[in-house]
Amino acid sequence: MAFIVEDGSGIAGANSFSSIAYITNYLTERNRQAENSWSTLAVAVQQAHAIAATDYLESRYRESFGGKKEFTSLTLAKAVLTFAANPIAASAVVIGSQTYTFVAALSSANDVLIGANASESINNLIQAVSANPDTLGITVGAGTVAHPDASSRAFEDDALIAEARLDGTQGNLIATTTTVVGAVWSSVTLIGGTDTGRPQPLSFPRLNLVDRDGIKILGIPDRLKQCNSEYAVRSVASILQPDPDVITGNQVIEKREKVDVIEETTRWLEGGRIQISIPYPAADSLIQEYLIPGGILLRG
Image (cartoon, rainbow, N blue to C red; front, side):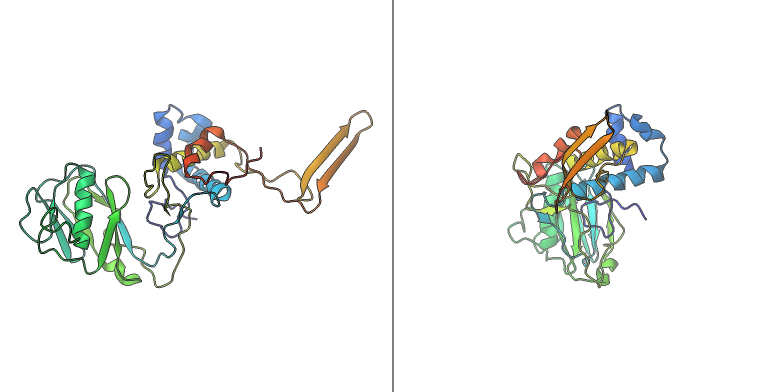
């Protein structure tokens, strides 16, 4: 099985919320890189534990996350553009047939006004791609028209996601480049367009989800990746969600042992259903704000 990290664009086949680099950096920043010998494990073994951690997250919480999956179909090609810093004048972003140029003062169609910071500049670029009439001549050059082949929207901090307007593999032909210093496209073209609909494999990214401060959650939030990292390092030591030690598969309601005469009695609830989730408080607490209140059953 390939190790595929979900970057927030609904990647087909994604099986981990965190990259190995992210997990290792997270642990190193907390002086825990040697915990359960994490730093000395082979990369393939680390990947297996990252996948196990994501499997556990999905098994335990998928019915309890607020909001809903963002991508119910993955037929549209897409790519993510991330800025490391605010662009300088004359730097450009290319999406297919359209070139958008960052400027200090607007003068032509497809000009994008440089904002006070990277996030503001990205927002201006998003408005340029759609040619939002409220921004023409203000933050987007007059005469700019909507991109004929792609749309764009905010992704994570200092990032946007560009998406083909038409379903199918034709969207995979839309090229993506940039001369913005430090900016990176996730791929050299929009990718993932298919002629067969596929659902988003993991619970994130999500729509209509906010944190405890009421801020909209975009892409894969850091706290989810941190939680995934915590579960991954715990997975090295033991199975995160072991099978219950019950032969019948029913819930134990009474168990008695008499040592002196070597007698043992066990009673099960007929037709009962076992649902066991081992609590990991330090990890669990990281994503509590993403859960529906009262929407998770915990039994240790």
